[in-house]
Image 1 (tube, rainbow, N blue to C red):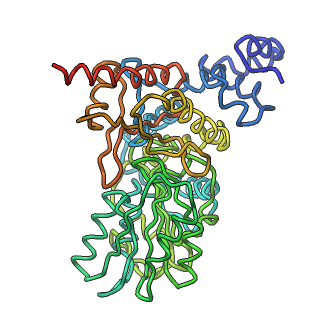
Image 2 (cartoon, rainbow, N blue to C red):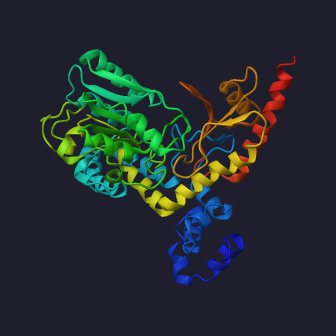
Image 3 (cartoon, helix red, strand yellow):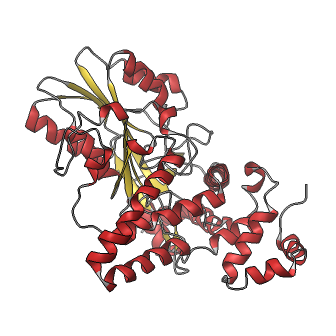
Length: 440
């Protein structure tokens, strides 16, 4: 099969009718180019397309990322493509024409279609999904809203996200519940081992198990369904932190077996900063108290979790454009590209003496997030992180949490292999730099 390149792209453009060319004349060049790139690549499988830099070049042009640096910390929060930014700005301007009219009577009416579209890509019923501002808000709604009593046990790990850990600790202090801590040995390429680590901690007093679908520190994919099945056999409810999994790779919430699920949409969906959602299984809604007071706290209407007061409707409504962009690329294409980028740079540095990886390179265990560390005397992850920035203007983040340490590298769909080649050069250069620095 002929590989996609700029020459084949131009040839495809020549085949367009005059009518179709005229229909796109009002589109900006980057949008027209992306449209044609997608058409040309339509008959190629996601794994074939993953390494095609010419195709992903047109995806990159949909973003306004800074040329001043190489952003490899998309795990914290990712930039939005132009279409999402433009929608947010347009809705913001409209809101300011007459806020109480346009926000509450116009933009607020868009929540129901948005709920339907989010539910469609999440694989759940729209009546089980509430729009929130981030994963922390969604998950803390569950953590603080569950009717737990003194002595009830919750199983969680030391590798879970700090906001969630702190929320559970607060419930422990306030209500006398018991937190059962697991210390995971990561990376792990044995689903049965991870699942048994959780299931062995279950007792007759366990009421909830808190699972992080993708460990944010190193990209470890946790076998949520295996653990959920074991939990449900004992009547244990399952809360899933999907902050780093939703729109990162394809799955549905129902496939996970989750009773509750929370995620941010400003990470892998590339929605505007301050967007997320909460999933609550329909029969669980009634007994879950909302984080912010609703007229009827015991109703089984999912909307009781959306009484947040006045909030940025323009950010919320721009989620729709993020969904469109995500579906335009395709879930499988995105998954394959992100996995390809992670393994691209890891393969090029894996033979450096003293290098250590905190992430699996195998599908199903690792995703697009990578973690690298150096076993060098005195070298800390922060030293590597600082070196990457000072010498190469690579923006990353360093991790030193429980038994996980290293520099976390998270590319996105706009990241190019040329940018990752700079990362590879920097990683190769660090051992000599560190050795010379410590001889002074």
